[in-house]
Amino acid sequence: MSKQLQQKLANEAARIMTDDGVTDIGTAKKKAMQRLGVKDKHLLPDNIDVESALSHYQKLFKPDHLAIRLHDFREIAKNAMQMLEDYSPRLVGSVLRGTATESNCVSLHLFTDSPEEIHFLLTDRKIPFVIDESQYQQTRNKTITCPVCRFFAGDVELKLSIFPYMALRQAPISPLNDKPMKRADLESVKKLISG
Image (tube, rainbow, N blue to C red; front, side, top):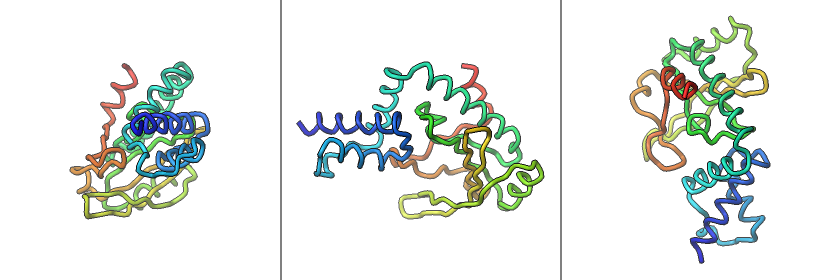
């Protein structure tokens, strides 16, 4: 019974992410628990199960619309990566995995020991941006805080996380599965787009 309930929670979390615009898996799982009246947190599905349910839900209920939107996201990622090519950009997250919803942003990792260079580049190109920061799990015992630049290309938000150059060799740990985060370089993104 608990496995069936976990699957039901994963499916509801996927629906919440797709239909309600929730981008955080943890938040979607909590909302799913509330909607289904589940109190026991031990019954929560893991993030991989929610990601799998999300992919299935999207293919079943919104295949054409989300496929077009995903293509648009990846095109925007490609264009940004070309502009930021000197900083070894890598696409990460739901746009790379193919499970992006309407509300997701395009997440790129950049690598430089001088984050101000990114600020100057965006300023020179007259791109309004906001400076923020994000924490990433570098190893099981080490968290790093990276500066982030956020801006919009049309109605799509881009999140540029700026890592020290040495971090190019070791991807942070994915919150989905506690393994190194999957990252794609510009050539890989071009291949995803073409097909």
